[in-house]
Length: 155
Image 1 (cartoon, helix red, strand yellow):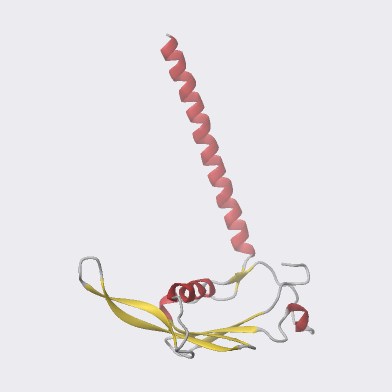
Image 2: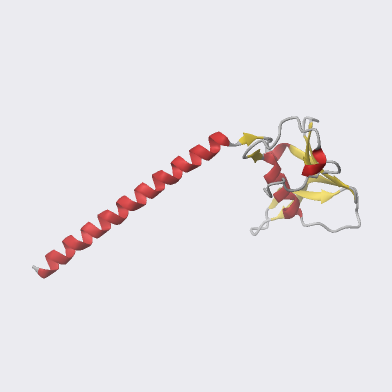
């Protein structure tokens, strides 16, 4: 009888935990949907169609190109892999995965809000001398993003 009573208590506790998990999961989905509807899409680019990324600031201009290299996998088979390489400063060594992270981040870029529409003074946002990130796609189109400083509210 004691074992039967313990099994019922265990089943009730398990049911409560499962219910709490389902409730918490549904609440998170509602929060995600609410934040998605408020985000402002800046770029929605296909990562595989990117062929060139240019980073430009007052220090200089760095051009990265995406090229195909052949490597051997663990089984000794030759495979093609796309990697980023620097085109403008050949003497610099780069980490292709870092440039790939930039490409991934800019490919689906969105904003949470508009700070000021048609701003008269861009210097307060650091856009008087911005860092420019340009992405060239395989169809020849170029998308450019100007990056400034934090907003006056520190966001």
